[in-house]
Image 1 (tube, rainbow, N blue to C red):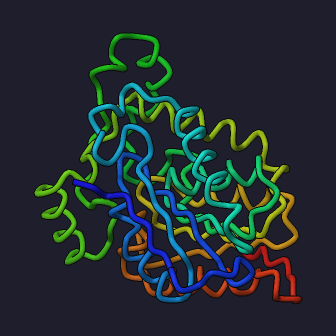
Image 2: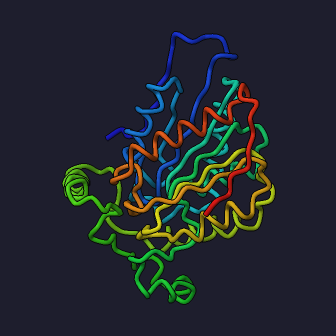
Image 3: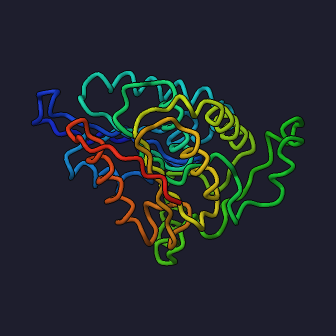
Length: 279
């Protein structure tokens, strides 16, 4: 099934009036998980783009052969293609997608703003199995091609009703995987290591939204970003009633509205620029 999407306001022709958001989905996920967020942003005047990372979406069987550099090259190519068409251009991502948005922020100086959701720089959430500590050993053996970390029963969602719905949808359609192949986890951690090395290069406005009870990645990763970037405008928002999939959980409306308000506040037309770094 086709899961990539582009939502365009075709009636807007003047580049000075055009604004867009490039969205990035999570590890072993697909653009499906970003669709409601994309629809919300589109209704608020933004053109929205979201594409499957290499090895994801319709090609999830290839996920064990891709590298973190493949993801970065893919994301940079999409950015280069789209950025020149807009006066205001934002990036937003979930999990792996949040890390990728920060990575692009380290290598591009014309980003209007970044909204990072459930930034996964460390696999230290409350549902991560103890076996993750054996990752360095496993990656040096043939095990890397056969072992996977299983998706936990909560599907990254605290809301039980939503959790059941996502489980049914995932079972019926190829919109993501129910496990994390070892090679894929290794690629995420290598991307994370590279991102952490270059955080000072980020100068654009950044908003990090993260749940205190994220099952995949604790708040440490988001706070590392906020503390490490050079941005004048940076804000950290912590959630208390969600797990990892913040766009589908109990605080989803708050998350989307907070993202929208941040984007509007850092628009070039806004003269007020503040540094907000409250934990």
